[in-house]
Amino acid sequence: MSDQPPVLPDGPQLRTIAMPRDANASGDIFGGWTLSQMDLAGAGYAAERAHGRVATIAIEAMRFLRPIFVGDEVSCFCSAVRTGETSVTVKVETWARGRGRGRRPEKVTEGIFTFVAMNEHGQPSPLPDQP
Image (cartoon, rainbow, N blue to C red; front, side):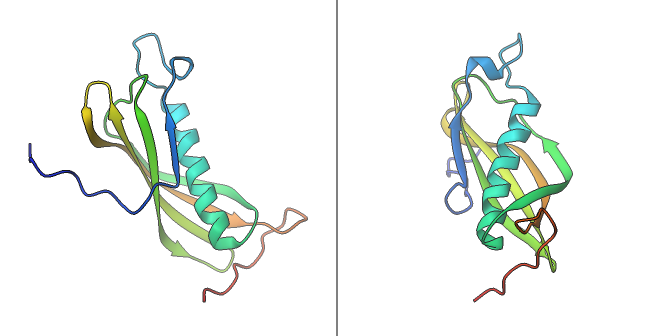
């Protein structure tokens, strides 16, 4: 194991603490809870790009790498993979630090989420031009 700290993406889109209500009987956090946090983070990131409402239309390449434990600080980092006329695809990496890891962050999950921009009627809407 390297003595160098891991290189994390720029600031997290979402940061939370894994709580006992989010765990199974073994004390590991449910994958569904983790997926939910990732979807929230990705949607926030996509909504910034869309300048408004978005909806999740696909989740692909989801990987659970390590367990998350009760009390871990969980952070989701987002980056754009591609954009279309009405959609943005976002890579979401989840990192945790805390119990069982010391204070060293570890990547625990990653996935690719696609969001579509929505207008006020719930129909797909073109993404605004980037400056």
